[in-house]
Image (cartoon, each protein chain N blue to C red):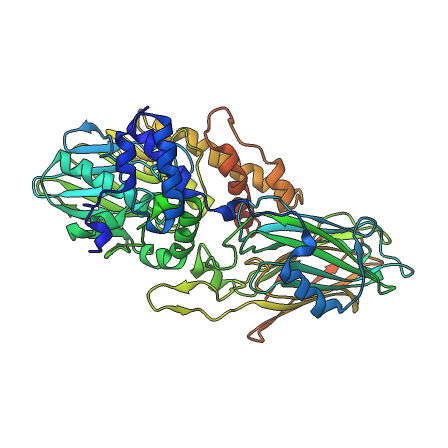
Length: 327
Length: 277
């Protein structure tokens, strides 16, 4: 455990917490700015969670890119409580969010946290891991997760520090201690979580979690609702995974981003977007449209439906093009 | 106002380092460019590209590891006047000279499209040397970062299995004296060796294509000296004059001296494609 993990300091933001007027805020800012090196990890209140089924808790992140304003709280984070212990599913985009999630767990149950599961390697899902190191859980991920985090993590961390600055202070890479290939069952005490590793789809490290007791399926970023789907692995694998996921008879699903209503209809829009993307990019390649023009010209299917089109659609086209041109 | 919003606003105050505003006003002021210019062109004058060469880049890249760039000539290649050499420079990359292309009148057009890695916000430059030895430059500022030190592949196993596979594609119906566009794809990780393994604290060996040569009936269409600033699976679009058909031959060599070749026979009427190892 690092000293930054003790969480018992009183950072300047605490003062602001009690401040009620703008001038005080500005004054604090003016003092704090030259003291950047002195910054501590941001302290957030416990995350708000919903309780859709007994023992199942979900925090819905905002559907945005990571910014200092949202502190990296942009992915859905969950935990499941058994008779014996707790499994946390994804930990948020900064140490601060991870701690706020841990505080929410502690409010819900005194049971120990025995598993921290990362559904894939993206920063908004793994950078809160460090908040749970003190619990000495098994950190569980896809069998490729450790390697992928080692290769891509340093870049993610650099980008996080660049984009979030002092909000991300203290955030580090915490790698999985257990890699899942295929399907494994984790026992929380009279409650079994089925953890399944997928072939390359959204990323090369996708993992889903199924809670048999409540019939809750945690999709990680194989599930996008409202937030435009993001392709950072293999578009064809992504479409195939969705086809298979739909056959799972779940009571409810928790996507990585956005809020699912009925299952499996919640992921139909996502599937339609990806299938259309594959179709349009293939057509561009066949027509000899170069990458730069395809990025401009391949339109977003059902553009009114999706959030964050400007941030992700063109990147999806670029990724799909680089993949599909080798078909 | 909620306490959460207050936290967040203060966070904003603290978060934005001054560097965020450091910007892109003067392409000549780049210190790396000053050095590259001295090394490559000694004291030679470089005119603005306007009438000779144009550079197309995105202002902000969607993916820093695959940034599409196009260099376009403002006039056709003729034996009287043609672009003989093109440099593609990325100031702030670990190795700024991304590619040096040689072209000929047989190229038809000195247009080249490829994809590059961009490590940090940078000027990208295309410098053309016409056959009279004069130099012209076009430059754009590109916002992208992490492209070089990002690990090469999203799917390393597949990449290894396909190493060195090539595809040649000719898009349009061929007319003897009209420049035809061709595309060359090389399956290669083009690894920069700049992604550090965080556990062993070591770097992978760089492994990248270093030269490419395209000939049509033995005559040089395009050659390129390149490095890992070119994206994984190097991809080039270029032009050539088809004449009466014949053979399009490609040879690529990587930094481990592995040699990859492919060729394509140009029937006068049909467009075909070849895949060769």
